[in-house]
Length: 78
Image (tube, rainbow, N blue to C red; front, side, top):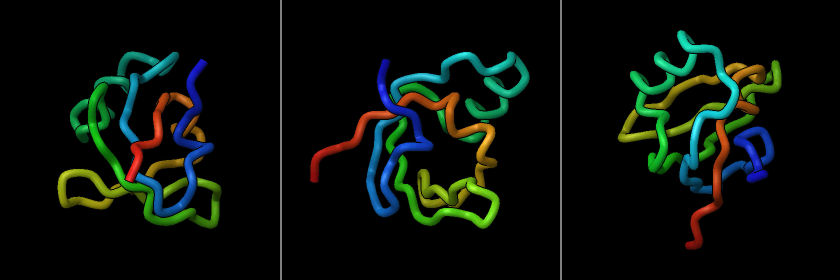
């Protein structure tokens, strides 16, 4: 099983491999935000509650800690 966004290093650029196990409405909302298979995102910051600030397509998004384990990712080589 691939690592999730919860395990990505701060400053890393990762590719989303898929959204695994998320309920339908959450899966849809993540897709609306651009967090879908093949998306390239940068992990910008860890939040106080354990979530992450990520950059995608010129926008920064705050993701709750509970969401991170649904996003399977692969680190992109620099």
